Image (spheres, rainbow, N blue to C red):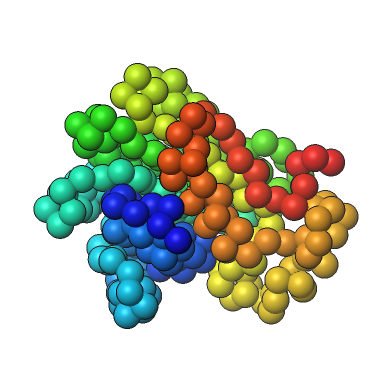
Length: 256
């Protein structure tokens, strides 16, 4: 407990899955959490649970593809808490269409959220971190940014967007190190989330059966909390000499 005591963290895509797990864990570790998502009702319900359990958190609607929406969230965060120490760019979408199947609208939608959303978040938050004299940014990429095959679940735009996040993270790490702002990326492999469950896979174990030949570490598929702990390490002062790294959380998939 207390690994983030006194720190203010904005987390995107926090109504469910990895973002929600991150918000819950950060609150347990003492952070003041600004949980954001486009899904307002579900987000508010989850944030109310965090507060009922003793956490300090607020829910704000955020369209990560909108500069105006980002500015509103940052302004509200500063008004409420006075600073921003941590940004977790977790929000993302997936469209299972390859290069030949995808239409321009599919491509643009994925890129606007997964790639432009990360850039806009950093653009909005970094000036406040510069004023603080420090900060930690954690960007959610994917093993699809590192390897091909089914790692991108047939999503060409998804793969490209996560590759963009990987490169942009390294760019930011270099340019803002002088401000003591650390920027790192997390690269999930197969992770059992609510989105996966809605697609018809009923458990983490069942999901793992599909990835047995790819991820050697049982149960061959992770859970949201596995990613949240990666966020926690990179957000905390435990990683104070770590920037520009890509941290795979994939059960050993990319070691093949």
